[in-house]
Amino acid sequence: MMPVTEVTWVRYLGNFLLLLPFTLHYHGLRGFLPGRFIAQLFRGLVLVLTTYLFFTAIQTVPIADAQIVFFINPLLVVVLAALMLREKLDFNRIVAVMVGFAGVFLVIRPGFKEFQIETLYALCAAVSFAVFLISTRILSQTESTLITLFFSALVGTFVLPFTMDSSWIFPSWNEFPFMVGVGLFMTIGHYFFFLALRHLDASLISPLTYFSIIGSTTVGYFGFGDVLSLNSLMGFVLIFTAGITVLVQERKKQRGKQLLN
Image (cartoon, rainbow, N blue to C red):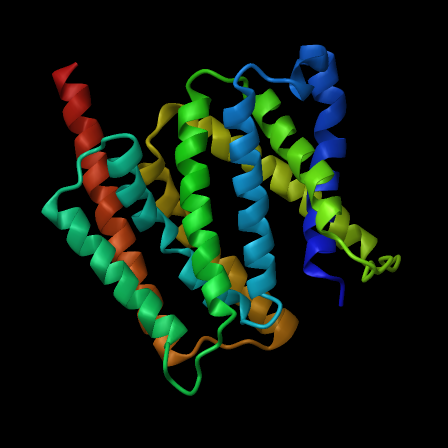
């Protein structure tokens, strides 16, 4: 088993190498020193933290369970958007957030025999990712998509080696295709995610991540023999319901704005 830090670094290295030629071609050296440097650095570090925490969680927690806990992030975005972007936080959204946290409680089961402390890493990853979404939303209004993606990869590639120790394990040839795939698909997904945030509110987009539970459950079952427990399934239903409620409310708000314009 490869160390979490190493796996995280490989993900960023692949991301960096894929984006480097495009960034140099279109923007030259600007990609290494973007205009809003501090904001870009903060966003990059938050994404590194999110990736590290989630990879740490799935080392011992079933992938689907970690993903379900991570799904609380759309509701956290609602709270953070109210605090940082001054978006309206009405009674219905407060109830949705509370229902979502009830779902997380069912999955984590603190104080019970089945409780795994590692699930808290997934919860912390969700908090970190919510901060990342808000910062991405802010930067997407003024910054180049390519430069933002590249600088995040740059931050991860050069920061993570300082956190590594002597536990480095050279990957086998069989592991290389998976490592390349992680870098490739994360780059593609991150690119389209950034484009979406340029045009839509973070609280409208983030609930769409719920559809990834299909892939997570499939990979967990066929790859590791993980099966969703009843508590996890109930927790997912609560979190999903709360998130979709927020999504519907956001759609109504968007339509209201369009009618006024």
